[in-house]
Amino acid sequence: MPRIACLCHLLISAAVLLPGASWARDCIGMVPAGSSTFWSAVEAGARQSADELELDLYTRGLSHDGDVEVQLQLIERVVARGCRGLIIAPTGQAIESRVAALRAQGIPTVYIDRDIAGEGAYGLVATDNFLAGQLAGQQLAELLGGRGRVALLRLRQDLQSTRERERGFLLAAQAAGLEVAFDAYLGDDREGIVAALSEHLPRLDGLFSPNGSSTRATLAALRQLGKAGQVRFVGFDGGDLLFDAVRQGEIQALLLQQPQAIGDHAVRLVQRALRGEPAAARLRLLLEPRVLTADKLAEMASPEQPW
Image 1 (tube, rainbow, N blue to C red):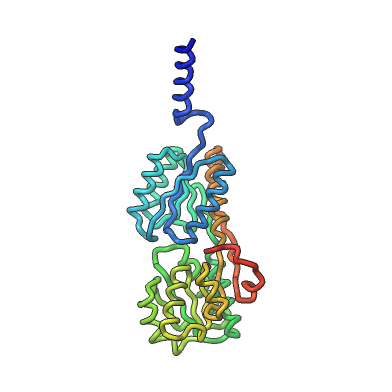
Image 2 (image 1 turned 180 degrees about the vertical axis):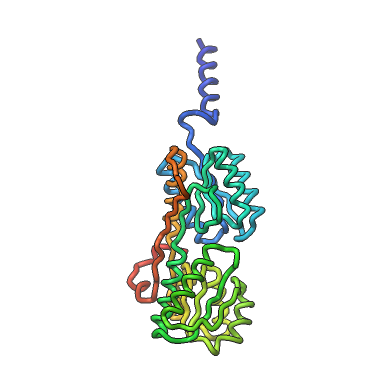
């Protein structure tokens, strides 16, 4: 009898280790496009939903947005891990061919934050970036009374999310009567922004920067030039530094996203794909941004998003 009991124990232990055990949790891989607090909030939302749905979330992210080769390597880690689905913020068009190959293998992908051309992904969860840009343009026009010269401080030509914000801002600002007198790709390099603003700021009444890193860099540049609070400034995303700048009047408004909701919905879309629910075309879930001003910030006990 002891030998039989021992054999039974070994069989049970082996069954627990089998990857196909019926009680094993499915793995979903997540590959964000950076390591900022925005992406941490996206992951937090995804992890909460994964726990609720009894899924394992395996996350591997980039240290800097834009490195396609590293992101492709991280996809291979997700596949090697045995994950059955993928959530990714694609950093370039090369991601699409790999995603299409995963789809053929039965591994669905959901894009987050930004889209790329192709039919490989099952769905997209992102901010309505065009609307966000429009709201920024309308907000700056309201601050300036519908007249004035403004600057559009673009981020990167190859990033779909900020391109849409810039496009929305440009159309809304011009429609509201503003003159976009300076329009250039400055990225999030503080010294480059300092050099550009040193030349153009005397002829500008307002600024727009389309993401968190460029907003922080522009704020730093204005402070370095001693001009913070002297020009109307609408930025993007949040975090303690930017919230404090709003309170101090150095930034007049911020466009805020819903990063935790992005992560939450992405996990639920992957689960939907794993259940075999078909999608004739890519499912697109665009979340509405909101405008945060000093008055709205004062009404809140603490900002809902810590990013």
